[in-house]
Structures are given as C-alpha cells and as structure tokens.
Image (cartoon, rainbow, N blue to C red; front, top):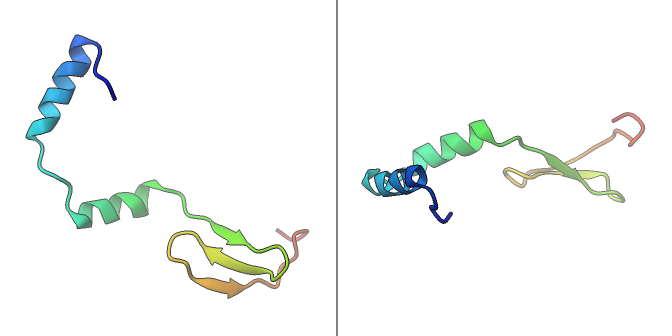
Length: 65
C-alpha cells in the first residue's frame, strides 16, 4: 500500500513500532478468520480439505449436497 494522505502516512510510520507476529498468532488468525472449504473431485468423489489436505471418500451425490 502506498500511503497518500496524512492519516495513512501516520499509520504506516506507527506500524514500524509494532513487534512481528508470532507463529501462534498467525495460526490463530488463520483458524478463526478464514472460512475453510473442501474440494470434491468430480470423478473419484473424493473430498480434499483445503486447510490440512486430508482426503476422504464422499458417498453423497451432487443432488444431495
């Protein structure tokens, strides 16, 4: 982001005083702010979690979803 206004410039300069995020904080933010989905393969009917990569066989048809 390119700071253009006086307010934006003051916010950008204040950001330099913040400590970097820890791995635990990043993990919490990812788990609590992003909606997680699964991708369903059309032919094999396997679902893959987009978060962890876990795969499972889905018995549901597209009509039931």
